Length: 183
Image 1 (cartoon, rainbow, N blue to C red):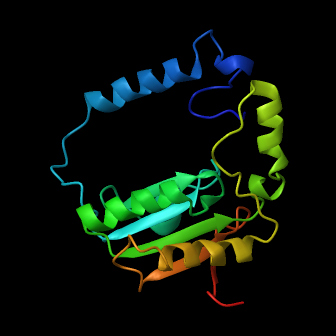
Image 2 (spheres, one colour; image 1 turned 135 degrees about the horizontal axis):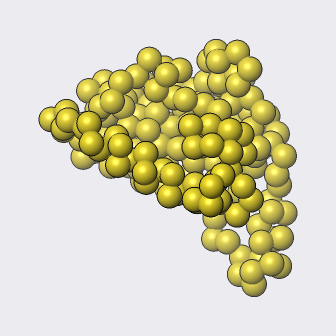
């Protein structure tokens, strides 16, 4: 783990000085809360957009997209792939909180490009139980963005599928590259 606002982390979750990383995060929250003013906004995103992206720590979505607090719903998972749980979140976002647009963001150098479904088998051997979920590993990031766009567009639960766009974020340049729905 690299050095950040929280110091250099040690194996096992401890940061320098014996505190755990979570202890330091909680302390940072106390400092944040001391100067916090309720912005008085509702849960509906101002821009009526949901962003689905990879959980990769190198991607600062709000900064990369010029977003402010309250602008969007952010749904992050490994690979940014559209899974049943992603559809669940998007359905709630659209039907209960009035979003209409979806932007999908995968990225270069994704860890899911180095895994296979064997990961599930290895977990089963280690813990004695097979995970109910798929790894959703992929080799071609552009094709996986297309697949994710298709999953959103064809979901019967989503009423707004006319403004769905997919991108690949380049982790070395910070630029988005749009992916056409058809290769």
